[in-house]
Amino acid sequence: MPINYALLLCIPIGLFAYFEARWMIRFVLGRYEQRERKAALLVGAFGALIIPLIYVCGVAGDAFSRHIGKFITPIMFALISAVFVLPIFRVLFERVRGDASNH
Image (cartoon, rainbow, N blue to C red):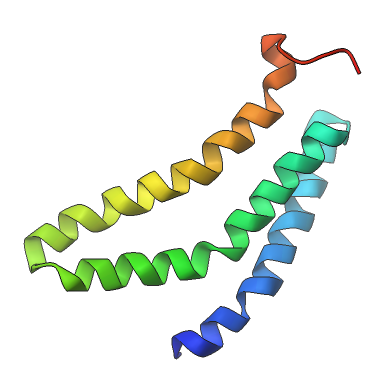
């Protein structure tokens, strides 16, 4: 599938990830407040950007030689994924640490 067509799937995948995260947060935590909305939006953004992220990591892996590309690609994918995933956990577990207000 050409990347032009694959990029058209980003919006439905992002929406699906958002609604799935919203349902999962309500089911697991039993609440859905402002913090949980932010976390669901971050999950949706990560879901929408997963296809371009995989494409960019593949192109970067092909740009380098065989051994270096196999080493760089998973590290780059993990670091970029951590940029999206770590704020989700920070938002969701803010109340557990006690940093959040009582609102």
